[in-house]
Image 1 (tube, rainbow, N blue to C red):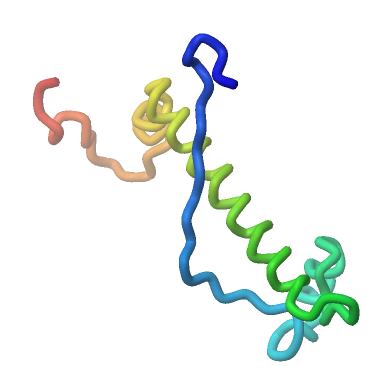
Image 2 (image 1 turned 90 degrees about the vertical axis):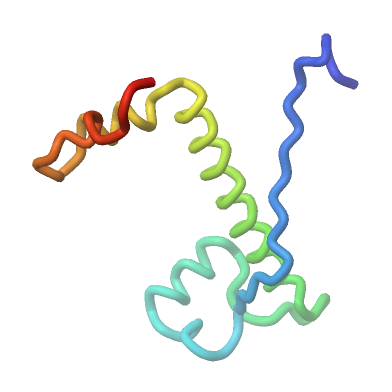
Length: 100
C-alpha cells in the first residue's frame, strides 16, 4: 500500500539477456570463481536452467541498482557537478552548453 502516494516503484526490463553458467568461458579461473561466489556455477541437477535464471536476475538487479544510482545523481545535480570536477579534458565544456 502506498504511503501518502510517496512510494517509488521501479523495474527494469531486459527482454534478451544471454547469460550462462556452464560451458564456454565459465571454466576459466576468474569466471568460475565469480560464478561460485554467486552460487550459480554449473548446472542445477534439481531444476535445469535455474542457475542461469538466477544469474540473469542478479545481472538485472545490478542494472536496476545502477539506474537508480544514476537517477538519484541526476536529480540531486551531482552528475554534472562530478563530471565537471573530475573531467579529464582541458576544455571548459560548461561554456559550450550555453545559458540555462
